[in-house]
Image (cartoon, rainbow, N blue to C red; front, top):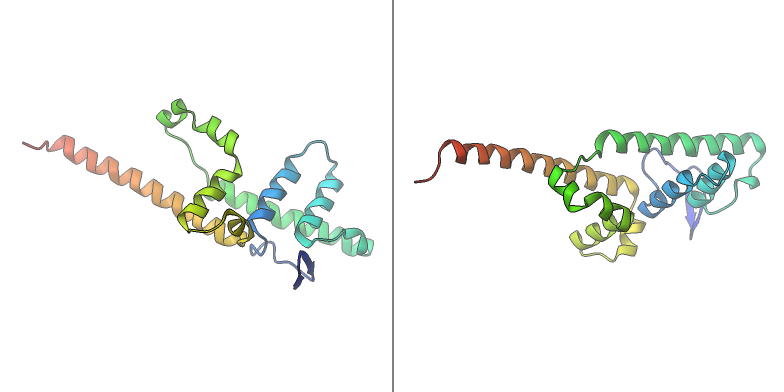
Length: 163
């Protein structure tokens, strides 16, 4: 694969996460858009990742390339659903976490990563998605552990109150 500015020549390892977090956000928007046909979504996803129209490929290679983009991106969506699922606490729901997520969308994650790593948000959007996914996964697992740990500690303090 060769990258010349925003153009990619050759095979992009989508399954390996060799696309940016900005690409991931754009692909989500593309595939959520019900006003586009399936072919338009596939074409627009290809253009987002490669920077050029798939119509430049012979029809047989075009079909394979578009299917590969969709299949490999679908693999990431399945990983996200399996490994990045977060169920908010009842208090978080009452406080409006779902409304906050709707209002800030993907920019909330971009901002949090930029703050945590002292980076410009535009830099975060250029990070490979596999890197961002790994950070999100470890952050979520650490959060789950801290929640469990705090319950254990809370249980001990209730069992053995201080005098």
